[in-house]
Length: 183
Image (cartoon, rainbow, N blue to C red):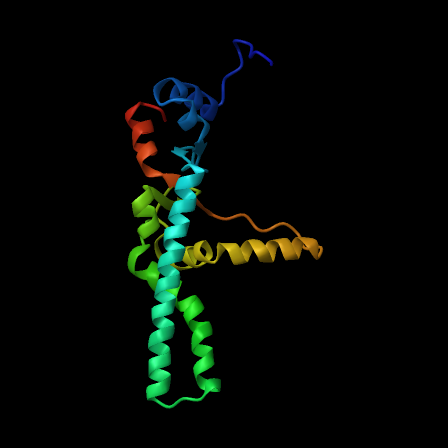
C-alpha cells in the first residue's frame, strides 16, 4: 500500500468515499460514483437493480400477453388470415415496452424503480432521460436478448459493445449523501 505525500491532493471521489465511509458506512461508500460533470451519485445494489428490472420485465410480459390476446380477438373478429395477423405479434414485442415507458418512465422511474427506490438518469449530468425514456425502457426490458447477442457477436469475432449514456442511481442513498454534506 502506498501512502500519499502531504503535497498530493486526494481525488474528489476518493475524498467523498472516505467521508461517506464514516457517515454512511463502507457499503454505501463503495457504491459512490461520479457523473461526468463531477456530481457524486450512489449506484444501487445488485439486488435493487435486478428487482427493478424483474418487475419491469414482468409488467412487460403481462402487457404483451394482453396485447396478444386483444390482437387475436381482433384478428378472429375481423376474419384475418395468419399472414396478416402474425406480424402483430412482432409489433407487440417492441410496442409494449415503448407504450409502458411512454406512460410511466418519463422521469426514469417505472414501476420497478418506484418499488426499489432506483431511477435511471443521464450519466453526463444526472438529469432526466425525458424523450429517450421509451428507448431506455426498450433496452432495459430486452436486456437479456442484448446480452445473448453480444456474446454471440463476441464469439463470432465482433468488437466490444458501445458504452451507454445512461446509468441507474440509488435516489434514497443520494439524498443521504447530500444530507451528510458529501459532495
